[in-house]
Length: 142
Image (tube, rainbow, N blue to C red; front, side, top):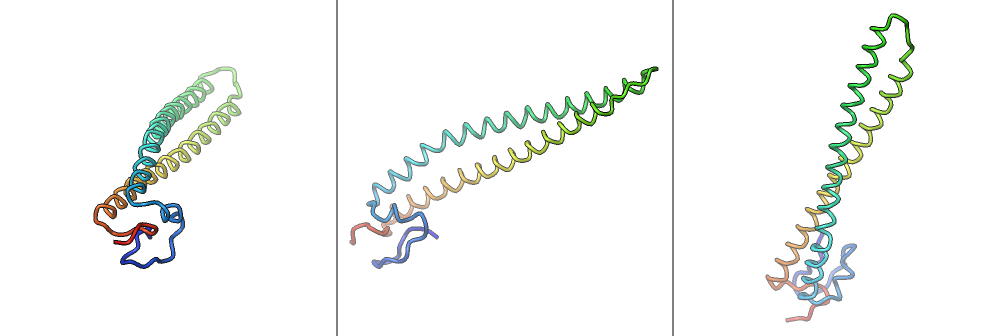
């Protein structure tokens, strides 16, 4: 649901549109564009940082797997039996936590991508409404 009102009448505003109701169309466009331009660099920076963390975690997970395999191999090769099982279990538990955090980061990154897309879509929609001359609530009648 958008904030545009067809015709001359007013309707109930969807949540989040109350602020835009008192703003003239030109100012609404400036506000929308300004918000988008304000958020876009932050969204990109967070997205890049999340990518970096995910890559680091994938590398860490691979190193944990390699270390666990190496510990198992050492344990099998030892003439004197060393009990490395608790250490292998700790490594596998750490690996599980890394995978969990990676999944959380991936979900957050996807939500951030969708938010950025929705902000851009809403800004384009508002710009199109303003250019087409459709009245927004609070704008002067023609």
